[in-house]
Length: 489
Image 1 (tube, rainbow, N blue to C red):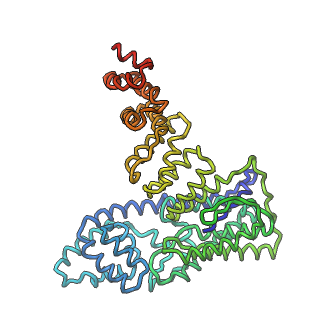
Image 2: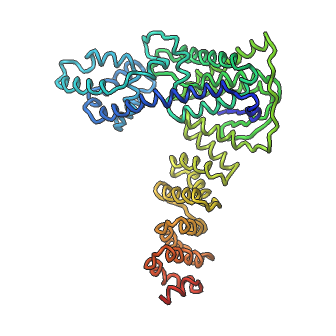
Image 3: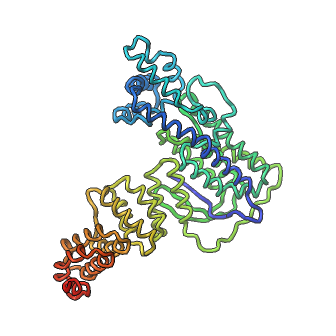
């Protein structure tokens, strides 16, 4: 798939992008305020629901209703039920307004059902635990026969489904919003942002109406800003980072080329999508933003912000990280892992990049990338506490998760023994020493590695544990000072 992120035009604090910052703050407040409070209450209610008789009484009927209405995710829902994954299934069911109406009208579990009283009491208790609706009230509702609520075309753009969804959108809002705000002025910028949100929501509603579920997120409005940026700079050459499938690079090209590339990408993504991301909202935002900026340029002069010369050569790492965070926010984990891999290729000693890649690569524990990322973390040169903690935590995860098993080379083990002794993780250091003695007795650094482990134990007051290594030290490291010291004592 295709992504392109301009690397020019950082924000200028001589004319701060206050409106962009304000829009970001509003999104953060909505998410960390009423949405998070609602989520916590829903989590408590869901815990009760899963432990009650309600899943057995309601969910089979819900699955049948999905089949009858031809829902796209009917098969996925049935598999989730078979695996007893009730929580995500409950979340989907809570957005199915027509089914809930039948349920509350006693048309699903009828009074003739011998367990009706049990169901009614449990359902009343569950409903009482639910908070007043906030997200569902202000999001776009795509369920059949839903009353038309124009205000949600705007309010849905200030709601998000997860923290990663929010942060990914806010990052791109900041990247593009600062430049567009500087060009348009704060008042026009805010008006165009809101119109972009409405245009994105309108396209999404037109396409998804009657298909069920809710629509929310700032990505449509952010897409409008992206289109405004492309039309604003038109044929001026802009340096940008791009990724096409698994190939990535950065190049200078006319800004307007980004617009058809973005539009084609959203259309292709929609055709390949399983419904988890609202690509039609992205498309609606792109078209609305392009039309707004083109109309503005036709009726008045717009001062185009000049490109700022970069302080140093940009290797594309920041853009690749931004892409990886966006894909993670969209829950496209496999592609996000590829993006983090690309970022790690650019900066193989960046601990945070490796940590992010490792956390996603572990989802495929038999994959070569998981083993490669682990080895890169083990090879990090830093000796600070944060690096040592990262290496030890990654080592423990790697041992537990890697399939068919860990692929530690003798050089890896030698390096990790030294790190774990420094971190006072002696149990793992000793296990690695035992593995070295067993699998690489001729390794040129075995002697000093055993000596470092034993010395560390002595310095930590673990005299008995250190003395237990005397036979191996006498065999492989007879010349080490710690060997002579232990032999005397």
